[in-house]
Length: 315
Ligand code: SN0
Image (cartoon, rainbow, N blue to C red; front, side, top):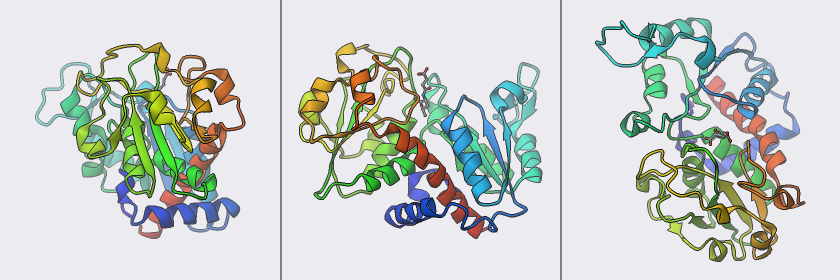
């Protein structure tokens, strides 16, 4: 594999999930593969799981990770061509990306959506400019549009907790005090489109995701109805896509409570974390035995490790 920008960069999701589960049993099996190779992890935004699990994954493969908090400590980058750079942007991505490529073999980037400029967000300007100018493999650690590393960890986790029948999987919007990106929800939808499942998206009217991503996925505006007999309930807040980046209503009654989980099929509660307790989800749900959020976070290491392994094999 050359780059990992989207879940569809994987040749086969099912095979990748199986390989990741094997790797989890023997995480150090391929510690020679990355010997002498360096990965630069560039963070334009905050991170806990992504930062630690991707470093751990790289180390398990024998690589040297270099981490940089680019947002706080790097020069502000210019992405437009032909600009007179006499304002606040100190360096052009053309130089920055080429320079970074001198120091490493793979570059992994976190750059959230601005949620103010829809066109630029949809064009994935950070990821695509690094891809264009760095000339080395690029890994998406949450971009404006997607978080495929999270989606792969989610798929691994669902495989580990799989039910005997075709599962019912619900992606539910939940309230949040801030306007959040669509990336996690988008990649979860794209991943579910590769699965054999009864998949339902539920959210209040006005929170429709990008229709070019959801395509013909089933949308149910009645959250309780959507939850009926669900085997997995994947929860995430996102801002409006149509009224781009806006919190159109707060809808606190969309919080995930024990009552709602009661109509599921002992449904597993999933969330990518970080999560706002008693805003997004009630304590009783996230603290219940059906909550699998910690295992999801654990699987971030193996999703990153299988992705890096595939890239290292093709270097
Ligand atoms: C990010 C998001 O895309 O929704 C990262 C998720 C992996 N989440 C947040 O920014 C939550 C921040 C908060 O203040 O709750």
